[in-house]
Image (cartoon, rainbow, N blue to C red; front, top):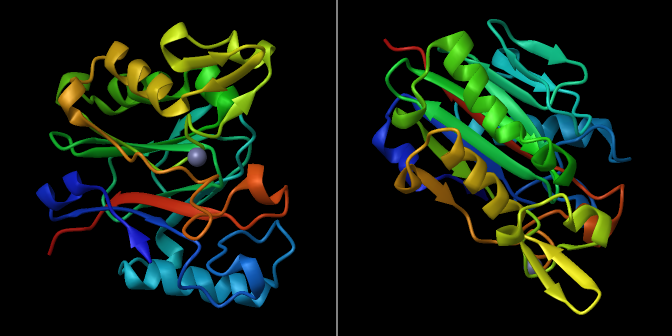
Length: 245
Ligand SMILES: [Zn+2]
């Protein structure tokens, strides 16, 4: 099963999609796991990747991967391959498809249809606290000529405020509008924090689509690091523009 934001229908050349845990060949709870780093059999991960990207009409050779480190580095890219220590990618090159790996962290997809240009960032609590979504918009504006007020964003499934409990030290790093406090326990709304950052970066509120689902409590649909531990399966999101013709 593959998720796509509603806004993607407006742009025929755009591919913006996310895998779930369903539809893969891996054993047990891995299912559609797309990470080689969590103890799954590599040949099954390869089959899952071929299945996921193949169903989107994307060749593996056209993908850009990032080895995410919960930082705030956003790289403009012009060629496929893999980047170390990167949590955000953007490009104005058609035929290049940018990947993000998630299992609770927030995937934020960005598009400026005017250029056109696309971007994606990986925003867990550390990346969100470091304002990587706003940085993604800024890098797309400065390096690719994107216009924030004309951009559209999709905030994908992630750990949601229903389940995302954090310690006080983490909660204090977020605006009060994104924190629910009950006595001594705190929950953070990472989607809302990213939404606010995108608006502060210049996006219109009605141009930000937010998926309300929660990777932690919707166990049938999503992998979750919080629920299953460090070796949980991983989902992937991808965004890019097909070459015309
Ligand atoms: Zn939940």
